[in-house]
Length: 448
Ligand code: NIG
Ligand code: FE
Image 1: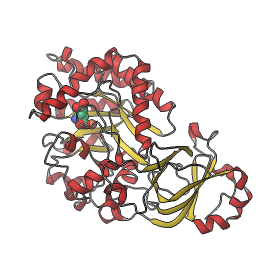
Image 2 (image 1 turned 90 degrees about the vertical axis):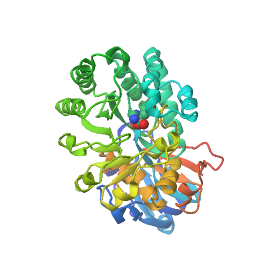
Image 3 (image 1 turned 180 degrees about the vertical axis):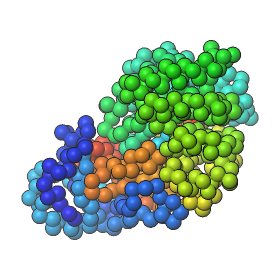
Image 4 (image 1 turned 60 degrees about the horizontal axis):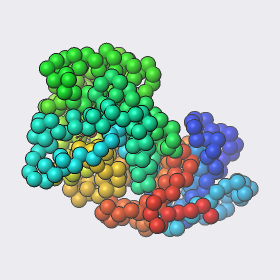
């Protein structure tokens, strides 16, 4: 263990959490999944290099990780001994500790479950067929438009709390069910309000370009103009969003419309990410000039695009819980992407239409069983590469000195069990920004 020489040097960018973040020593860790290594997206074999430390301990001070090593080193450490009285010790009970999950694609600003769509799909209707008949994304509009900012932020906060209960500490959160100037801005405000009450990190994204709302049905170019000329400038001016996303797909936004929206985002200083190739093929090169940090879904990505994508820093974010929930037989082609050298991430896509789950361990499990990713690869894809998809790799995604103290503790003896025990509730504690919040499970860890 390398102790903090001078504690002050560890408080450089701690944000809202420093003042009330105690020093924490996590100990009795059977496997610490450090993910130590380069702060760049991991590809190919690198996805399997977890940097496991057995019988480990981690010291966090002021919301940052300051040292990582064996439990024995921690026991002997002079700094820890001297400061014992002000360090809170967390006994991880021989469990597994990994970097908190980075859920880099979610749509949490909605109010109602879409139960009618659910039943229609069970009876054989398709996701696109339901959307064409007026269901789908458009059926979540009224709930958002009629709700107050406070009601929306309560919904977002409850989703964030469920996420952290299963090990997630960083979340990308999109608007996209308001689809008017007022309701998209209200949705982004709700995300910000909820984020302030949650110890983890939230990255807000404007998804005004989710679908064309009914009132613009016959004048879609006016809606695209509203996004470009009003929503994006306002979200940028008020710093309500870091990203602009577009659902670039048949039935949503065409490539040319997407290009206009992404150009406006860049013009106003916002970064970009896209929903692409979820339902049909598209050429990634058409959007490359806008440097999306992430291409999301990618079920129908074409072979010819893989080599170019492998050369980019952009991440392909795969969302298999949507395939699962929509009852599809086909899943995103993870093996083709990985073999081609593309950096892949995995996220929940939490939303009421195609993926009503906040549970990252469930996503890990699906990716192993249906996409033939290994248990090691899915850990890297949901931590390090998730952080890269949000360009947060300097702060998140591994357990190394200097990184944010964002950690998840699991009541298992081997990291592979996280993906193995399907839909289980084995996260026994989550630490974000150095703050411990207990998980719901009966195995919860406690301060000693
Ligand atoms: O990522 N595809 C677009 N957006 C979501 C679904 C949204 C919804 O159906 O409400 C997705 O799957
Ligand atoms: Fe999505």
